[in-house]
Image 1: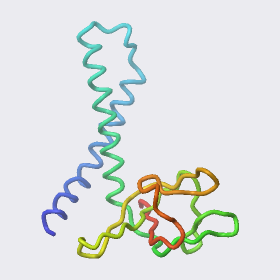
Image 2 (image 1 turned 60 degrees about the vertical axis):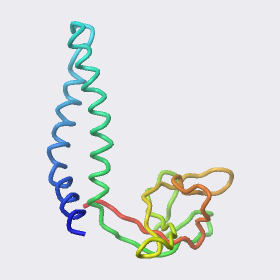
Image 3 (image 1 turned 180 degrees about the vertical axis):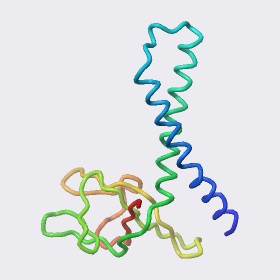
Image 4 (image 1 turned 135 degrees about the vertical axis):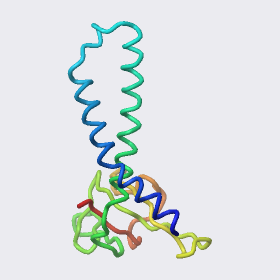
Length: 144
């Protein structure tokens, strides 16, 4: 879809500016003594801090848009009790895209970006904790 591609490209183009803005804001936050500010400037400081938090989330999502698929296949549990995809092992904190079946979707489903964590003797997908990992279609992406 052309509109989707155009919108994604706009976000990708903004990535550098957002990164620079975050760097400048962090530098400000590290080098300012809030106790020396007047009440008006303290409020602005707090607003900038909240804006920075939102930009960090946005920046992370933009970076995620640029990731390239490196491995795609089905998860299997290895001898060490960890799940792997074509030899790439996943442990707690590993980022992964997992397939969610949905017959209403054009391709029969879609990928959800998520994270693998460990609980109760086994690993699970944070964004779909009830789904069985063994045999699940998944992919691993990384930024370049």
